[in-house]
Image (cartoon, rainbow, N blue to C red; front, side, top):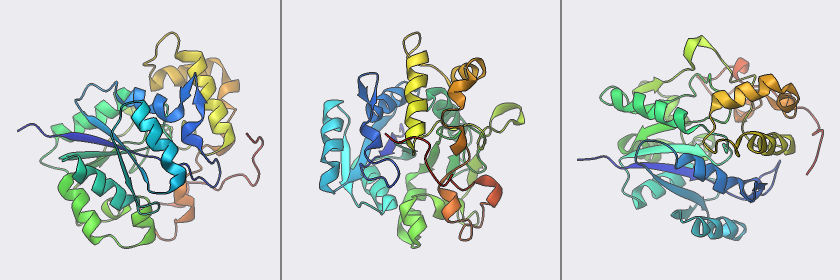
Length: 275
């Protein structure tokens, strides 16, 4: 029987650094819509669902989901593990992908590549990602898990960071789960040097500029296309280069067993620009 693949895109309006970032405009559509557009370009047959919160502020995300004809689930604001589990159960998923909504430049080919690896080794792994360790440019985050794996994490995880970030209980417990990882070819590592995600105003300026540069000629532009663009126009790379390597790990290095201080850095003390 064919397994149902579900891509869960977690999205909310609340953000301490850049509120409402998922609804910022990119070439006439919301950042969230542009990201969903890219996820629908993958070769594998998969359903996408937007998982947001029950907070009234997130009504706008529900309206956007309806506008772009994507199913949605509303759940806990801070317990994203429960939000993912309930969304997956609602849609009868067999395989669940966690992809956060701050990855609007995610390359469909990378999603397919990690899925290919997962299915080629399905009898060997419960969870496969390209994040442990990370080697892809930040913002190409793909985490794949079986429904049984997600269910076990949902039943057993209890720490706040495990609930908030969905998957730490899985990748922090290799004795309980069979873990696989996909790395960038040729032993290259862009994870701390290239930032394609959004958390700050500069990230938005960077992402919007990349879309303006590449989208018209090829709406399915690749991660390699972005890297080539940044080589040709280093001024674009410099827009948000100060935040390269800044990620959520920095708040939990002392709590995480499998993450070191070399895999994160502290954010600059002040944004250079504000929206």
